[in-house]
Length: 139
Image (cartoon, rainbow, N blue to C red; front, side):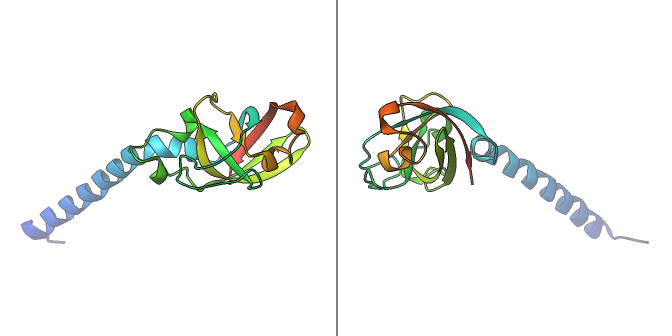
């Protein structure tokens, strides 16, 4: 089969475009996707009195919300636009499971730790416990 020089050049350029676009997409999405992938995390849960969170959302102690540790929350120029904001997590604690929405960052928490609203914490443990071991995952 015979291809003109222009057709061959077009095919080569098209193939290179597809290859390079996939490399660019992969390299730019890697920093965010690594902590957003579905996998189980372990840590400690505590609770706090919510208000205006890092995601720009006002929450009360009765809302089922969570603040994610700073390492997993990430550092974006505008935290309100952080891809983790609004994500849903399922948290397993000593006395149950709760599903919460990410609305805040916990600067004092270690990797894997979460800070929950009192209403969310009460679904997994007694408030008197203060801090409890958990496993959790993004849904």
